[in-house]
Length: 426
Image 1 (cartoon, rainbow, N blue to C red):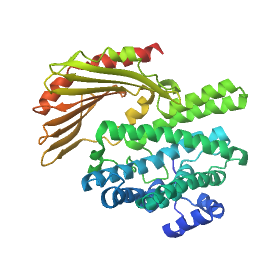
Image 2: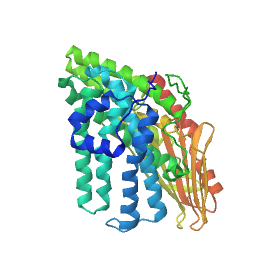
Image 3: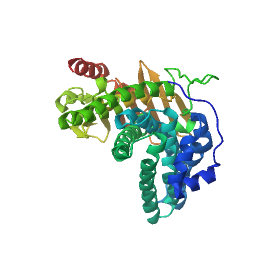
Image 4: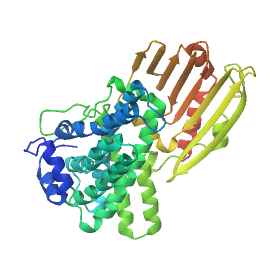
């Protein structure tokens, strides 16, 4: 994959924002004609505007206060940083989706034009996000900004991606669906598994990867953008299948192809979403005892949305005298490709506080996340295994070693075997 590295003058950021919001029909042709790079678009536009919703979120949560009160400064800053990072990642993911889907809708594949489309169509949402500091009214303004952003996307595709007029509406719709699915899962992975506060360490750079000084940019396959390139390749293959199905006029084939597209978006093997384990399978790895405590409650279920399955088991262990541990095992099989991409940042964290610590590291090809609060004698031990299973053990214990020992009661190898057996049977 190559990227044109030539440069051409473009508007200053204030003029560009005004023009894209007030006269998008005349501004999109100008944008399409400009030559830019990934670095240009990020450093001159995205990095600045994407900070607006993050800053507004911090102000609304920790200074103005939400309806249920103000969050602490630390929590507000953490949420703001994670929101900012997800914005930077989200724009690039949207560009990958736009570029990969282009041939399906009679459009021209072009990575930079796709990134321009994603970046400038986000302008309305980013600017409107400043109003979220106003209780009540702010949320309506932000919603309006998001809807106007969809209109900007629709207007921009014919210029940036050379989309035929009759294909602009369905192209826009599929872009939105695919991007929403990706970002929902990525939010869940980054917030719920790895731990939100680690992003405060600045371990992620959207411009990571190695670039040459020539007219081509190549990415190390082990770098964030290298992983995204491989991801985009899968998406491109799925988009070709969708295009063939659309041309065939077969409604069933089109439905199946769209399902495969969602599978590719989520990184499923073979272009289809991997099914999560059935409840009876997941139940087999929930131990009867954990950390010397007997299991007192258990709940196992499997849910699906848009054909994407997730299974979850929750159990509580007690000794009858107030001591307890909570266990949660989640199978995100339908999103295992994104689970793997959650390691983009290759984060290793060790943050000390006055009352404990938070630590993230890798061991035996698994991601481990520990949180310990000495003042409460409370800990949380998380493990990601097989790029699909999330295991969390939480409770009041003497020390983290005791929690780790308890977590050892979950047979991770058995989980990996179940996942491998399911993959081989498909």
